[in-house]
Length: 120
Ligand code: HEM
Image 1 (cartoon, rainbow, N blue to C red):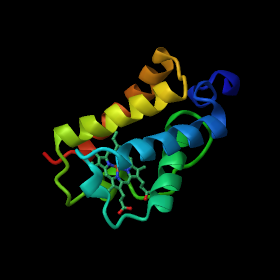
Image 2: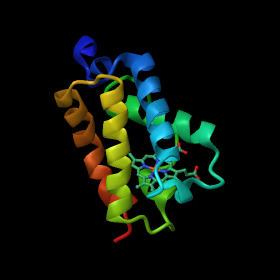
Image 3: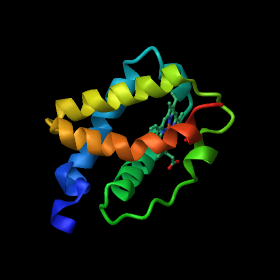
């Protein structure tokens, strides 16, 4: 039901906005990945990510960006970089006091993207 969706557990629109904001702050401070974001339109990245997390968490949004495969193609992103982004997302959720089991639910919904993000 909508009231118990993962999106609601993440704090709804406000919660997801705040998590994505903290994620971007963490990425900006992370030397493991910051070079990958040089020249990126961060506002577009932010709104794309908010829309994507809303869609995968049952918030009723339809993600309108390019597929994860197309967005990340050609960069040969590594396992280490993937793990760094996940680490930054966990820290963002910690900072927003998202309970661990709710964190794990979101991570589980993003885990299948691994094969479309990391260069094989
Ligand atoms: C679970 C893993 C990941 C997910 C779910 C994810 C998701 C997304 C989403 C939704 C967008 C916005 C697309 C749009 O609407 O335009 C995006 C863009 C981007 N992602 Fe990822 N991503 C992941 C991992 C990574 C990794 C490991 C890197 C590199 C360190 C990365 C680098 C980027 C960059 C640079 C952009 C901006 C692309 C551009 O606008 O030119 N992502 N990602």
